[in-house]
Amino acid sequence: MFIEPYHNQHQQKEKRTGWIEVICGSMFSGKTEELIRRLNRARIAKQEVKIFKPTVDTRYHAEDIVSHNASSVGSVPIQHPSDMLALVGNCDVVGIDEAQFFDNTVVDIANKLAESGKRVIIAGLDMDFLGNPFGPMPNLMAVAEYITKVHAVCVVCGDVANYSYRKIAVQDQVVLGETDSYEARCRKCFHL
Image 1 (cartoon, helix red, strand yellow):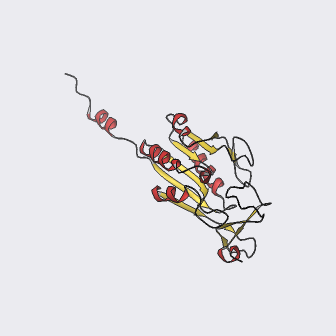
Image 2: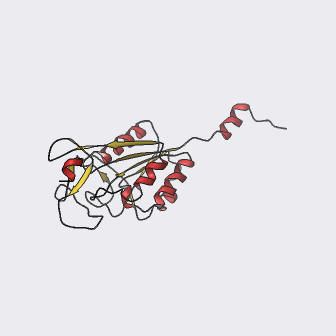
Image 3: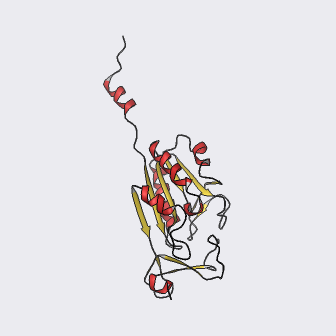
């Protein structure tokens, strides 16, 4: 009868713990820049990384995720969050940008990925242009082990900004744009 050494038995039973990190804030607050920074650090640590973004986000590049300061990293554009499950393989870290554009199934997918032992790093707007919670972001923050709220600078008064003020008269919740359509504002200047 063959008895496996104790250290091998222990390794088989030990499952790596995964977790969810959410980076949220307004437009121009550095969410994507922070996501890219964390993903690059994981790569430096020789961890395999897979990065996803919604196909609707084509502002800077059809495939790459790109921050406002032009930092970029390759990603896989996907239509539905469930597409990630077939594409992640044995990676260690999963990055998701612009999560507010996905439906609520992204919460279940993020949980499944974390439960399978992956570090899941998600960036997205926490509020829409009206100052209301945006898409699945509140639910992602509820299940996340770590939440980082980043802030911009109010273009009106210079205070800490956490609102995305829409400068154009369009009422659709999703309107892709940059400084031509949006600006960061503090609470007081957002409600002027």
